[in-house]
Image (cartoon, rainbow, N blue to C red; front, side):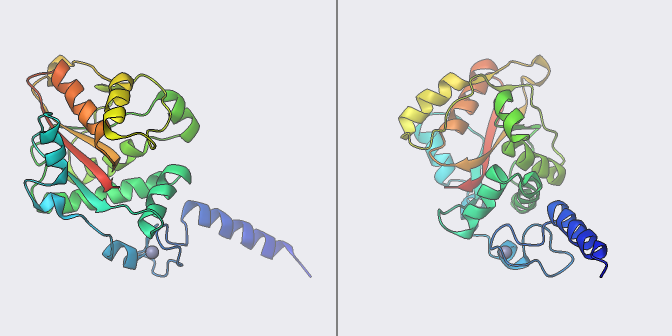
Length: 238
Ligand SMILES: [Zn+2]
């Protein structure tokens, strides 16, 4: 019996699975149709979108209003719940090296935002930065990949030379809002870039928990470029 063909077939199949996963990164079911890539049609149709982007005033804009940080507009796209399939999406991006999933979800979210004319006049998308040491370890910044998908859909360029993460910090998961804001204030910085000092920046993050990261990044931009306008977006609301 010639075993090589089956070994070669399995190896080829594993390689294809790596490059083009055959199971949905949300529900884990097998992808059936050739047009399904990374996420199955059922999951895509069932994404639990929050309605924030349909309303001028929403949870995100209220958080910024309460904290007295001025924004043009802010919203999230879908609700992320622990132990549900939406958690798989975010974990697959973050911990299981699926940058393409971040691009795909950013693109889908941006198409929906466009339907409501959100961020239409933003000049630049600024992904919340990741510390260079962390990028070395993870190989990509998920906020930058989400921004890449949005950039493609909205035709708004990305800039990564304005916001900076200066400290490779530990997770903020177990901190309250005020503790998170104090912590974020120490680890993010913004640089004044003269040519875009009057621009409208859209800051993009992966998850909105208390909003501390986006609050601090927006404030840092106001501090360094007072003439600039700022909007904020997070793919998921925790
Ligand atoms: Zn699915």
